[in-house]
Amino acid sequence: MTKRINHKKLKLFVLEVLKKAGLDVYSRRSVATGLYEASVRGVDSHGVRLLSHYVNSALKGRKNPKPNYKFKRPFPALGVLNADNAFGHAAGMKAIDLCIKIAKKNGVGVVAVKNSSHPGALASMAIKAARKNYIAFAFTHADSLMLSHNGKKAYFGTNPICFAAPRKEKEPFCIDMATSMISWNKLLNLRKKNISLKDNLAADGQGKITRIPSKAKSLLAAGAYKGYALASMVETLCGIYTGMNFGQSIPAMYEHPMNKPRKLGQFYIVIKPDAAISLNSFLKRMQKLTSQVRSQKPRTKKNKVMMPNDPEIHSTKTRSKNGIPLDSETFLQLKKLSKKFNVQLNCIN
Image (cartoon, rainbow, N blue to C red; front, side):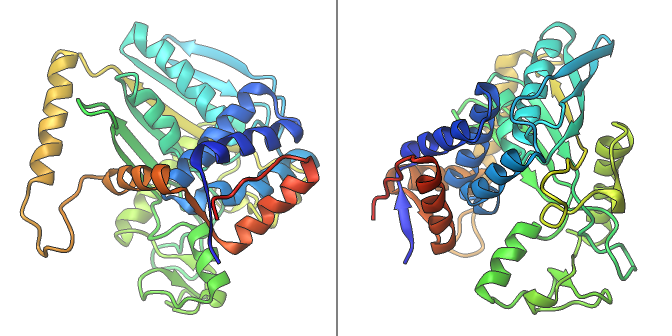
């Protein structure tokens, strides 16, 4: 039976567990925000279900709970953040903070992150900048899970791309997507539930499309060659540019020893929106674009025409009111953490 938990209580629970696991203040706030926002926005694959894994990675040494960041700025608008194997969420939030500071003076701020871990859902980082009236791009890479074009095996990861921009309404415009058809975490969820896959999602060990989750060895690119090409772009920014592992040299998230860091990269670009036009004009035009898209006549009465991020905004409203659903496995993991660290877990039902 699915349990539900109040969204505010969930965030407090995550914060307290991470504190007991040894994370410093900035790290635990960043990780808690990333996991909480993913869950409340309906992106369960990158939400609180990963808390147990993150705690384990802190306790066993894969991630540094108290990193010593080092930042150098070889050019006025471009810097490099050595994250000291920090949690990916913390490194990403730190990079966005630095980008905003640089962009405030130079109009644009670019920060490449090295010696990091995976930052989860990138929307939390990009939206953080957009809520302060900046445009933001966010990129990261992952272990080889995307079937190569015309190949049998994977080389690039699901390498997500995120873009956010402010508008008149409270919640920014945001695109946050893997360059594969689905994320590997979503496939793992389908595998646990033994749900058959659609024909365009995954391939077996020979590169042939499979509908059986247990036989899936790689994911298909979004838009065929186009998604594959975008993944290569992200790899260039996050792996090649940063000097980190890339392609098949990236250690697998769930198979790599938990006491060894994965050496991942991230890449962020933050831009002031008031270069060609005023900030107010930009916000009004973005809102007009949003309204025009939403007002289009739908193909069926069942589904409205939506902008990217509209489903997540709807989920946030619903889950903030009714609670965040926890599947049985996630609930049991949280109960174990509750007992281990003596942190109370209060569910609605």
